Length: 202
Image 1 (tube, rainbow, N blue to C red):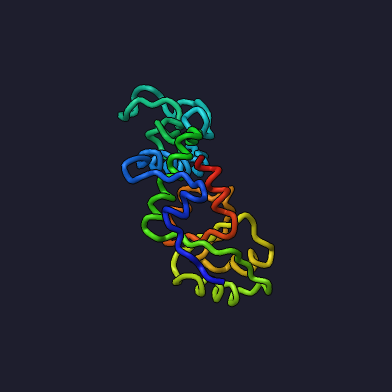
Image 2 (image 1 turned 120 degrees about the vertical axis):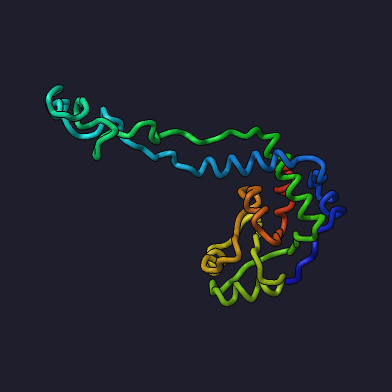
C-alpha cells in the first residue's frame, strides 16, 4: 500500500473543482466562523432582580437611619441581588449558503493540492484492530503529523484501531468539512473519496 501525491492535473481529471488563491478566502472565513458559532450552546444565564430569591419587603425604614434609601434586598447593589445586563440564553448559530460552502471547500482543497499536502491510496484498513498496526500503516504512507484520512467508509476494526491515535482522524468524504482540512498537515484520500468530493464542489 503506497501513497501518491495528488496533483492539480489528477484533481481536474477527477472533475474536482478547484479555486485559485485569488478567490474564496472570505467564504472560508465565513464557514469556519459559522462552525465555531454553531458549537456554542448559548446557555449562559444570570438572574435579574425579579428572579433571585427574596421578597419585596423594604429592608429598613425610609427616614431616620442616616443611611441611603433602599427598597428590597434583591437590588443589584446587594450581595445576592440580581444582575444588571448579565448574560441571557441566546442562539449563536449562523447559516451559510450552499454556494459559499462549495466555494470554501474548493478553495481549501485547491490550496492543499498545490502545496502537495494531499495523498491518495487505493485502500486503507487495519484488520486486527490494533493501534500499533494502525500507526504502522499510517507512518508507512506519510510522516507522523496531524493527518486526516478521508474515505467513503471504514470498517469497525479500522475505527477501533485508530480511535486512540490523537494525531490521526478518520472521516468520510461526505462528512469532512473545511475546518478539519485546515487543521490537518496532510490529507490521505482513500479509494473513490475524491469522486465524492468532486460532487460536493461541483
